Length: 307
Image (cartoon, rainbow, N blue to C red):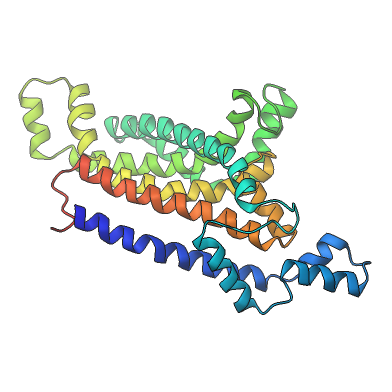
């Protein structure tokens, strides 16, 4: 286990550097000039050139990249070209909102998926099973950019139950969490159902029934635990999808998180801010996947990561 963790940590930083390198060069390929966005097209050429020198945008891309790496090595992500503030401060100010939305969406997904997945497997080939499969198919087929406005129209405009946008209390969190968590719930429902059906006919399940355990105890205590391994793996992978999906969801609901900040940074060609947002998302994704690997070892001690 220690050897595996050491290997993963050694791969952590190259993976992170690869992501940031790709983003750095791709964002510089996007058409548009951040200086023109800041000053406007009507600004004089001398003013544009002066600002470009001040921001270091007159240097070759490879020199800008080396400067970015030097700053990254000491924890300095630079200054935002548009907001004129430290990138680290801007990103950290938005991170709690994104984390709140992601955890709420994951809670919605887990609650729906485990309830429907267990029921679907327990009532295999009944109308309950068919309804659960229909929900999962429907959830996978609905994109966030369509489901979000639909929920706004239904629950905010027509009935007035919930606020349209912004971040506030629990009522502001419900619609974004439902929008972001629906697709994940649909995928997990199918995974849980499939995993349970794979293990329910194993010998140890029959032994548990022979000991006189109730059917509910057999399903929840024995079958469910032994079917959690693939579900846990998918859950970790989907966490990154939730962070990526938050970009669209936060834009729809004007949620003040990193996703919306990323969109604004791309629109204004704010290179350092885009890189800072991607850095936080990539770190979260890599850390969660490392945690999921450890959790899989806890769930199934038979897993070996090498000696």
